[in-house]
Length: 293
Image (cartoon, rainbow, N blue to C red):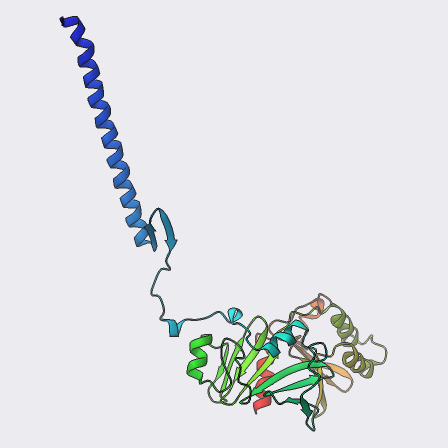
């Protein structure tokens, strides 16, 4: 082979060596970069395995028995409660028409271990006693200790050690736990358009018939309300609707809108008035405290 024919071969050999070297460098660079990313991800709480990543929470992971469970995620176990929720807490629609005895106060006592407290057919609250053997909410049964309750349900929404109150607010109910009973109230999302129209009309003195007409219409149209006399005052309240109205001498003395009350709009222009109070507390807790006292 002469000198002229060898030159192209040498050039090709050099080009080949350079190409192989570059490919090797690119491959190693990618491998190192991938390893660096995997290391960084692992430090940030992301593990890499088989090409798939899965998120791991940062910080100290609580032990299972100390986990804080969002109250809204607590499951309703009791078939009775599920029926009441599905039928808007109406005793008749939930077909709870047999198997009970009525006490002197008109409450419905069932042999399965629960009592319904009602306004006509609307159930205001339910009390489960030791005869009720099924789980009520969050896999908790009547008689479970406070330690077991907290382990299963997490941090309580309401707690008063002096009064012995241990309560949870879920998406569907308020539940209060004691040594020998569980008391449950509905937690509803109610439309207050018609109610507020009536309330505001009475509040500003434009309702024909005044107090008498207001109370009659409340009783006939809004069965979730309770009407009680407290000394010289008349207390109109609904734990479901989250509102209290105090009447004195035929006029509205005070309106208290509790946590969760859904304003329809009619009452908005009066919210700055001194006789209207917006509370951060839950009315169900207040009613429960009064019940156990």
